[in-house]
Length: 511
View (cartoon, rainbow, N blue to C red):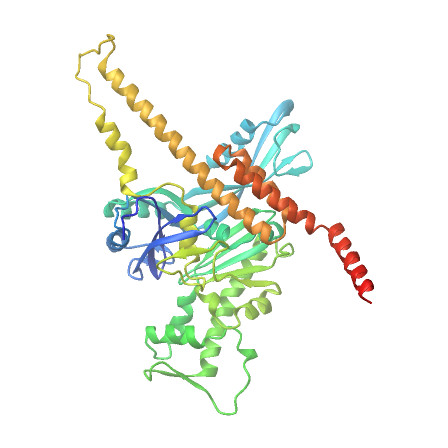
């Protein structure tokens, strides 16, 4: 295999495993996986939070080496997902008053956002902000720019976590000698990867069943409304099974193979059924079902409590989307509906975009988050690319103090000017790469909207693609626009009605 020099790399810090992935985004919107590696993390991560720095650093080093061996290239930097027990959202309100009626500008909106970020939260750090609405007079607006008023109130949803969460991640990666490109909020990336535009707009709750934690995210009108990480997960079920004098490995196998989240649907057998794993352990079927159902019920009741706290329980027209390992439990969707009274439940076993390449990704929801982190990345993470700027800078000869060039200018000044020009060139290249990555993301969304026959939204997204100003994509956008307009025309109510009339006429003629 030839060395790969263009890829994105990401790391997921899970409670069961630390997973690394490298891959690239293809022009059709799909993801190509080039390398994947993982290490057990039970001895260094609990509830999604690092507690043993040394062991985490060792695992990270091992993962990077494994992926580099597959890629035949060095990884210069990685994206890192942030999740874990302390991650949650907190609503905040900021207000600006004016002496006279003033037209709201983007600068004023930015001032509100900055005021919100400056509010101190004890032992917590604001990782990201999701603006909700802006109250202008008696109206709630998503975009208040251009509206005249004498006061504006901004409502923000701050995504926060304990300050030590990011600090410990930085320490581990520094110890392992791995550069971090950027942090990604894992639940936000997961939502982008598994939710449809209709689900986010109509309102839904996304539940990610992890090993030690369960993450609840509520969306409405394309805006995150509430998010929290509950310290309960699939491992709690396994430990309950272990209480029956069963080894943890066998307990996990029993849960995965026979676990039933809603055992009431099981037909009663005349003779008692016993489950076994390789003859090493035995447990009565009713006993196993009681254990699994009781713990699942506890987790789902906690999930529903968070939906109630969000105050959006009556506005989730798209229902619920379940993903993660425990979403594979038999009848988990039935259990969810019985406990929450939400009847529309979808289990997301894979992401909305197709994934290609080797190694093959599991289509059971367990690897959705790591794929989502890869999809969020934008910069090339190959070490050759990372070091290119430094090499080019080193190629610029250092100035000798006190000497001047032929024009009589300081040689050091000339050298600095060359470095500035190089930085500007690299900045433009990175901006172009980001635009291209954004273009791929938009075209992927266009493809999904077209498949859903949501032609109006698809055309709006194409307009966003136009606004990126990529000259080499203009023809492709125009072709896609014509294709969707033609589909919209063919599928219009008038056209369908006309086709029905013509078909009836043909049938009459045959008669």
